[in-house]
Length: 115
Image (tube, rainbow, N blue to C red):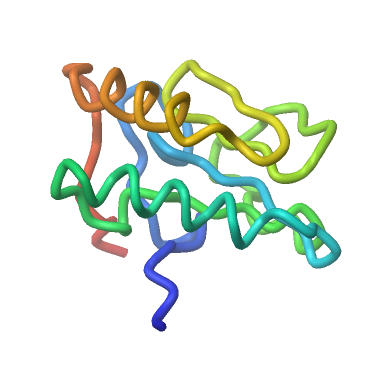
């Protein structure tokens, strides 16, 4: 299976200035990060949104340098979907609800960056 989650350097910035509308913070030793990414993929697939909308930040690699992702991450996985922050293995219902709310925002950015 190809990982469709883009890195921070490949995602487009929404008008709010963050590195993405959906941000997943992961790390090398994170036990639930793969499961969390799969939950996000399934949630956005329900609405026909490409995986390119997801910005993955590896906290071990500090990939977000200069990209605008300055959330304080205290546990992994941490997922930011617009203004909603979910820590740990997220509940599918919470993710789906947050994705739907984000999609309804005028500022939602679902196109990959042209870098």
